[in-house]
Image 1 (tube, one colour):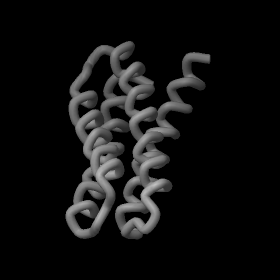
Image 2 (cartoon, rainbow, N blue to C red; image 1 turned 90 degrees about the vertical axis):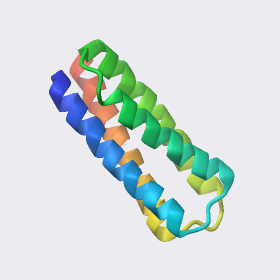
Image 3 (cartoon, rainbow, N blue to C red; image 1 turned 45 degrees about the horizontal axis):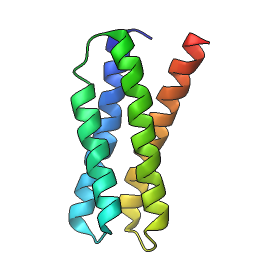
Length: 107
């Protein structure tokens, strides 16, 4: 996967995080979930501008860990707006798939 493909994949994660941010505004969510979603969005937005493949590969690892935290916060939050839950799951799935693609490429 070249740097441009990684940037595009990170952009897809940011788009999913955008949906989670929008869903946050429409419903109630506990503080940990709100923070986790905001962290994921911020990280994807800032990391997609990287151009070095090694830095992008590390960014994928970082984003996936942040997506894991957002998913855990979503599970631990109890009642979560279905749109928010779906958006967090989508972002997490995209981050996870990207991480596995990168890992398989380097294996």
